[in-house]
Length: 254
Length: 317
Image (cartoon, rainbow over all chains, first blue to last red; front, side, top):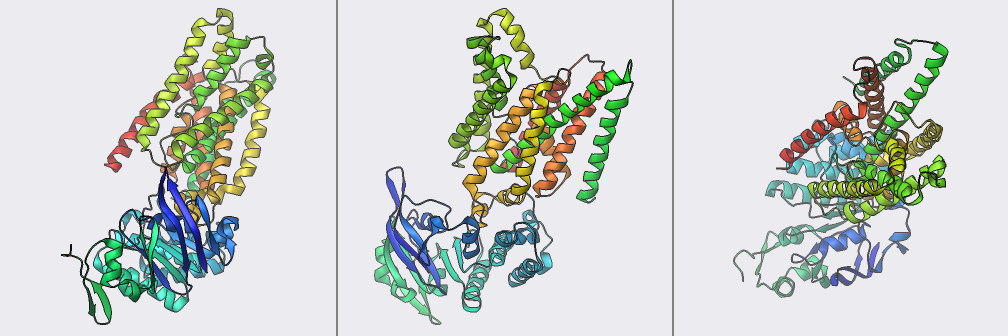
């Protein structure tokens, strides 16, 4: 279980994340939503140790994450950020093999190779595993990076806007895979999402942030309704039910 | 061609040049010339490998392939320290007479300079590469002007003493420091074996490296110290050669298309030895010492540097 306790981060004098406390339930997809600049990505970065918090703490099963050794932490929690600029030229397989680094330290055992093969298979990348990353489309690249995180085999998978720059087809593909990770492999997924409809359809719980604070938190259905959305986004958003999914029709609201 | 084949080719080339340099056209007493040539070969190898190694690891932790410790002004820092010592304490001071003390002071100053540079410029990842480059150039010029200013004011006799430190020269290697340099290099490599795979992960960028369990800040700090010490070593041995690291590191990246630092560093080191020993051989036997190797290196390196910059700007645009 991940517990965020009274966490704050200041950039200059401005609190980007302001005294946030949240508990992440295991075996579920939790989405962080909220307007631009709400502190979603910053919060995710602090939970994954990419950024140090100014005050407060994050607990992973009662241990403060700052006290956990780097490689032990990397076996429990993985994070994928939006920008993945690299100086080196790698094939998909090489990248996915890096996911085993916390275990292998660069020397892949047979077990590591098995995990890499499985991750490639899971993301439908086996046929193209020897292609170079810079030859791929945005969707394929994103899949390769997610395969790396899957090979890392952590209980917690954190993703920062994984649907950025992806078309509808690839976005749905990725969200379905995340759903599978949770339902079949028992992982816990925390994801920052911009599109509330993806959050509504695919997540179990939603944490809504605004101005660095948690403004709403709960099971998806408690958040996806016009009253709650009004508080989060300052917009009147009608919610319609379609095949059991709640869809927010925000395109012409004000 | 496989990378192991390429490494073997480089190793053979390096051996050929070392052999040529050691045995070609030995005049006078063999027992006189041969050990002297071996010392020079050793000095060139230590220098070359130190520069290659430090440049590759520096570029990995700063996530770029254009800036090197030398281009960012680390060489100039060495000259500043030397000039300050000569100006304020004179050439008879203990800091000049005792070469080891002098060497230690230079190392400390250069490590501090590198750490400050990193903290203010590279840490936040917020400046584009051209800005960093500009800052490096300005810093280099500032430090260069400061030293020139002091050199103008300095006593002419002191200046003559100082001058021998100012220009890179493989003909008069600082032999006293050679064994210390070799020892430093060996220690650096022993440490290097332990961090090789971490450096590989590092080339995926800061966020991916942390995700995969690399203790990022600690590794960056260690590597910065490592590369400044190595640059200090090579500068103390032969003097500043600004563009050399840039050439050998980038040739290695281009020739050996891999992310593995064990291969990249080995390749860059072999290319260094080929360039220095082979270059010096050609200078001595073809040009008959009418020019110096460092002049040619900086000429060729400067052109290569511009080429890399243009290529980078094209891929960025």
